[in-house]
Image (tube, rainbow, N blue to C red):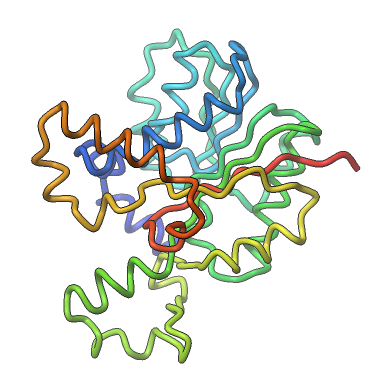
Length: 260
């Protein structure tokens, strides 16, 4: 937790999502949230690892009843500072590994859009995912975000000439290894599938949340409104293509909780 807290005390999640290249992930995730809410106007939603509230606040202002659980105190303070007081939003400090304050089957939709970036043991990943599934209603939806392995190898290790500095963090299969001090846990599609196989869920979709946006971030940030709109249109038309999932910086795994 110390590594995570230190990082987020000096990192602005809002700034990450604000440039045009960062908006792609937000636009995409919100599109699928709305798709699976299926027109529902007052869903019960929990966001586990809510950060500074970009998604939680937007959904509360749409009329949903939102519970925002965030581990890092600084992030929680920023989230609360944005509230007008009119939102149906409860913001609490908590850990994705323990949602025992919430009963089984409480929420229509569970969002896990940050915790899986930082859990580097299979045990902790399954514990967090199992908690998210537990508090979701039967036939409810769970959406989980992951950071993918290949963009880091391509853009950071080779693209920024960090091969020698990172060689001890990469295994023979070119899979990045991490410990808590490296902060981010990087996965491949087969790692996600393995986790899903141990849960009482059915996968509905696995999508590329930002696709190629981070490979060409400078160009995307320079686009005029018309061109950026077309880029988003292209991205949304291709983000479900499984042949590009592993090259996206972020993926969104969309699951339905099965009947017992």
